[in-house]
Amino acid sequence: MAVSGIISAIIIGLIIGALGRLVVPGRQAIPIWLTMVIGIIAALIGTAIARGLGVADTRGIDWLELIIQVVLAAIGVVAAVAIYRRRSVG
Image 1: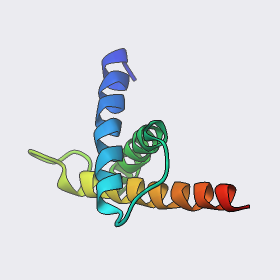
Image 2 (image 1 turned 90 degrees about the horizontal axis):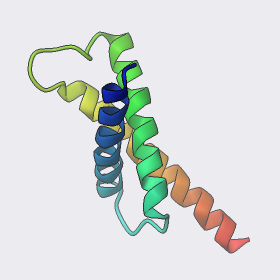
Image 3 (image 1 turned 120 degrees about the horizontal axis):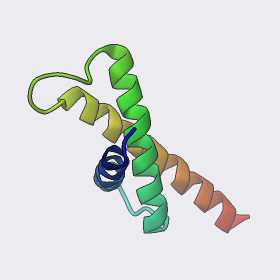
């Protein structure tokens, strides 16, 4: 992966993290940096899954890939909130 690919993955990941946090209802008591990291990881894993399913390279916007990434980010945010909540309680 070229440097430009890594930079674009980070930028896309930040957006994916924000979208993942937006689709989770309620207040999320996790730091913004954690949301960013979750988004970057979700974007990379989502792209790999989309490629495996053969839906990563379509004409125009890859909507299915985007949906996979946002769902993964939302799952990551929910998991992070649960871990943070458990750490703060006990």
